[in-house]
Amino acid sequence: MTEKAFENGLKIRREVMGDYYVDRALDNLSDFNRDLQDFVTRHCWNDVWGRPGLEKKTRSLLNIVMLTALNRSHELEAHVIGAVNNGCTTEEISEALLQATVYCGFPAGIDAFRTAKGVLEKNGLLAGTNEAT
Image (tube, rainbow, N blue to C red):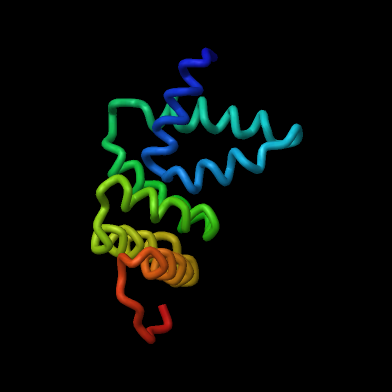
């Protein structure tokens, strides 16, 4: 792959995930994980996220649902912010999570709602409540 593919992937990654998230990932580079970060930036962000077939907003909602299915709360946290950066509303995120709950199971859905709620509250996008999820 070319350096252009890496740079374009890095640009898309920053647009979606934000500078803080990307800088944190890149600041943790080592000989052990350098190839992984290069691979993710080129293939995930350039080759897939850079494709014209879906809007970034749609890709974000798909990621939220897939990460719910996989029960990957750490990545879900990051992609909830990515979804907001791509123009998703809290209502759209909630609807995607509700859809995922039906197909992925209630424990996965409840955990995903809890994760997303915490991220949205932390970023001032959702008022805090005393609800369990």
